[in-house]
Each structure stands twice: as C-alpha cells, then as structure tokens.
Amino acid sequence: MHELSLAKDAVRKVERVVWEAGGGRVVRVSVSVGALAAVSAGHLRRHFAEAARGTRAEGARLDLRDEDGVGAPDADALRIDSIEIEPCLPAGRE
Image 1: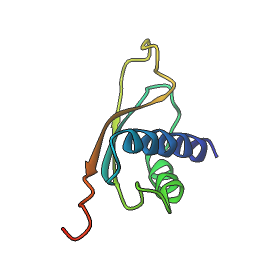
Image 2 (image 1 turned 90 degrees about the horizontal axis):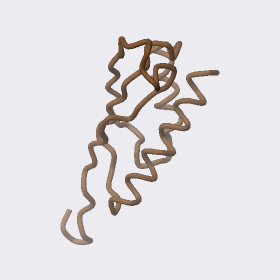
Image 3 (image 1 turned 90 degrees about the vertical axis):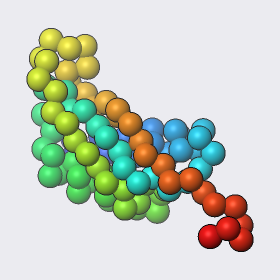
C-alpha cells in the first residue's frame, strides 16, 4: 500500500506539470528513490502504471534511480527528477 500512495501522488504531480506545460502525453518519468524510502521498485512500477491509467501518464516509462545518502533531507521520499512530454499536435497535423 505504501507504494500505491506514493505512485498516486507522483501521478498527480506529473499531471499538474503536464497541464502547466500545455498538455501532451507523458513518455517517461524519472524518479529518485531516497535511501530510507522503503520502496520496492517492482511494486512502485506496477502501482504507477495502475495510478496512471486514464491519465496523460498512461503507458509512460518509469525510470527509477536509488539514492545512497541516508542523511539527505528527502532520504525517506521520492523525487521526480524529470518528465518527458510528447507535445500535442494541432488538429489536422497528426
């Protein structure tokens, strides 16, 4: 359940960034996992895919990078490092 709530929160943040950027489909999301986050990569991937269903992030690749610094301020959290967005094409330009 821990990974599901983290995944839902990440998808909400990704959706907000995409909306602020003017839309498009999310192709890739790169996330750093804090050393103390106690997150299973496999579970997080599955829950991210589940949370992204029906959003612009559906089908996006989730790249995870483990952080080593246990003394970092966000060592117990996930941090979205980057979001790759495929721009929307104007109508008739597909």
